[in-house]
Length: 114
Image (tube, rainbow, N blue to C red):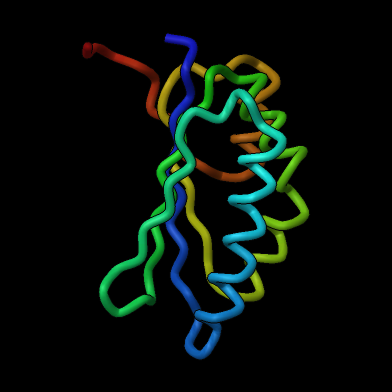
């Protein structure tokens, strides 16, 4: 399976929701405008608006690398508004595997499915 999926989880800091939402929209716009390899990039907020889950699907490892190049600085800025954890699903290539390892994100290789 070439597709790479990720689940990013933000815990939004108290009184930072408006800044978080504004910055998130900037990231969404950047992905929409610049990343043809992004298949899904969907953001969800819990009812208390303290947790955000981003469900991402990319065509392949190169598309993930393009995503990180496109929004890397914006993603770093998100740390001003919340804490981030990421899980990666699929079979990343060697280059992406090194990046994921540096991020400390767990990888779940593809096993089986539709």
